[in-house]
Each structure stands twice: as structure tokens, then as C-alpha cells.
Image (cartoon, rainbow, N blue to C red; front, side, top):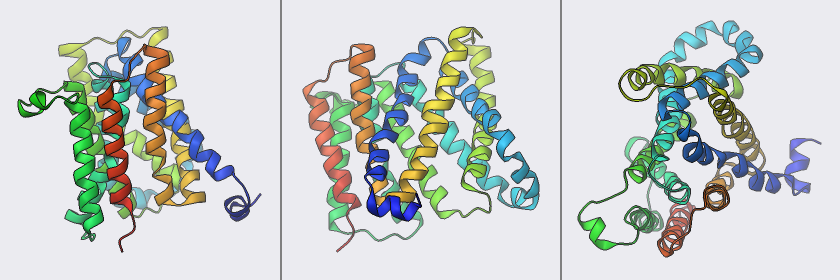
Length: 301
């Protein structure tokens, strides 16, 4: 079936919209469960190196054929790898050591807000009243989550460290997303992803060494193999590939709704796998974040 017929005559694109976050949200499972067996930066480093090693046999030929393009795009690819795989790869794993899956999922959903802010600041994107209101409401939602709905914690800046790491991850994903969109590449989509994974591993390597020497030692056992492969394949290769399909069939704007569904799956995984409990502030914060992102993403009138 041709893409156009799939887009116009089938529920398949919308099924993808529901299925893709199932794999995307497993990154939060890795962040909560994997870090019990593998140190966070080690897990991020070996994950992206594994992604590269899996994809390399299929795309190295393209990369070698486009050597001039590689040299031309070197620093852009390194930056994308550092942000998309370095910051967004390591920060959630560090966050998972001290916060819940529900918190991580909802906070990460705020990343479109940071995309809008960066677009306005660096790419002269226009902002209207709807977006301003959306930004304020979404910020209120994120603050509700990280302060656990307690105004005294907010006023005294007493936050869970993991929540702040997730805010950093959301900002990192925003930076990655907006530059990925604005920087054109001569590589195929998966060819560029292969290189981004490679540079992500390279950018993480010095921090991995520091973690090994001064903080945590990695045990290269069966648990290490399981979590690295799981992180590389499920929230890595599968989630990325399905997301490109979602964008292709329903467009970038509607594809953004995967983040809403992602946060729901994250909370469900937390309840089922880690016996987490949703509190009232989770519901209030989620409603504010979802409403804020919805208003901010509306087409300007």
C-alpha cells in the first residue's frame, strides 16, 4: 500500500500514533530499572554505541560514499549527537535514580514549550497570545510536578534532583529537535541517525570514563547486556523508526501528540512494574502541561 493511500484511507497512521509511544516510554523503564544494574552514564554510552554498531553495517556504505558531506556536516552531527544522545540519553538515566516514572514522563512532555521558546529566540519564530498563555500554563504544570504541589517547596527551591535532571533533558530534547529540523542534511534519515548515535557515544565517552574512575564501576554481566540491548533496540531504534513513520503519515504537528501518550504509558509502566502511586499533584500537573502544550502548539490566528 502506498503512503498516500495509507494516509487517506486507513486507520494505520493513527494506530502508529498509539503504538510508537509504547516503545518510546520504555526509555523511562530503562531510566528507573536499568540504573539499578548499570551506572547511568555507562548505560547511555553503551546504549548509543550499540545502536551505532547495529545500524553501521546497513549505512556505512552511504557514509563512505558521502565523505565530503560527512566532513561538511561534522560539527553539526557532533552537536546533534551530543544533545540528542548525550544530554537526552544520560540525563533521564541520572534522573531515574531519584524520581518516579510519572514525574519523568510528565516533565518530558513539556519539551515542545522549550522548542517554541528556542524558535522565538534563535529562529525569529512568531509568538502570539495563545502561545504565551500556553507557556505560562505549562510552566505552572511542570512546577506543580517538581514541587509535589507544595508551595513551600517551590518558594524554598526544594526539588527532587531527578526532576531537575528531567527538566534539563526536556530542554536538551528541545535543542536537539529544533536544530534537527533546521539543519538540512545530505544523508538519508537513518544514515544521519547512525552518525548521530556514533557522535552521541563519542560525546559521552569522557564522562563515562570519569564515572568509572571516580563514581561507579560497571559490571559487565548478563544484566548489563540485557539493559544495554533493551535500551538500544526498544526506545532507540524501534521508537525512532516508528516516529519517522508517524511524521511521514500524519505530519509533524499531529506527531507531537506522541508525547502526550508517552507520559500516560510512562505512568502505567511505573504503576505496573515499580509499584508507583499517582498522587493528586500528578493529575493537576498533567492537566496543566497538556493544556499548556495544546494552546502553545495551536496555529496562530
